[in-house]
Length: 354
Image (cartoon, rainbow, N blue to C red; front, side, top):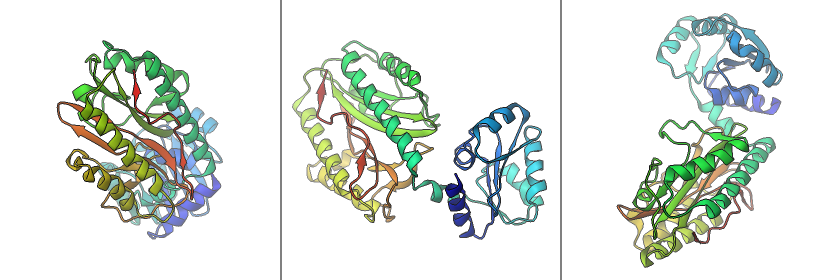
């Protein structure tokens, strides 16, 4: 935790700030070890304070590391307590609330809104974070094994989701709370698979379906993310051909991952292979993204991104092909960037036929 705080202050100093204030729960957790309704304060001497309403104080004291915990009235009381401590500081905050920022600016002239110090620090994972991500990935692999034994023709997408989420919750894996979906998982059979972010429906699996199973779940705060595509019995020659193209594209992307390689070069190697097979127009998203305390973090593995990978970044590689009204195919792994990258998912990428 001490090293995290040093890193946060170092990145804050790059934008002429000496104090950091975290409103977002992910940043509060990264700074303090406590995930809840509170404000986190990191001062230039490393002193860390949590300002919390009374209903959160007990948990904040129990879960945080090396923090002073202050009780304040919920809402504006938290902000007032914050202001009293840092009026004269050069403050950076992740606060995105317009009315709160307007209030803060009246009392703290040298305050700026920026997530940069938080994301810049979080992009490189420490050994504890990597260990948590590995464990979460192992549980996801176990859930893919459940798919092999529990999926069947006539089963609803929602029924499979219920089976998988029961296992996940029993193993301390939870919904990410991702705002752009109403479901914890993506389970998309047949034509539904052509929607990369399909909602889980009551549609039943049919013979000849391809089923996209994207498992994005949180373990001890950190998001692990992997996708496999299964076949329900015999599938069409086109579906077989397309699956092999996606598999080879992903393999090429994984091989490209190393420190100092530009993110765009990984995307381009995956994209070029799919384009060379005349399926380029069906690959409709970037090749991957960073993972951590949020589903999508830095860096973006996109042909637009010149940023170079660094050791201990956590990213996904997930090319896909989506043919409207027919099927979708995506194969995704989470990995840790090393000279020899650590691919955290061991479940097979050969096509599994149910």
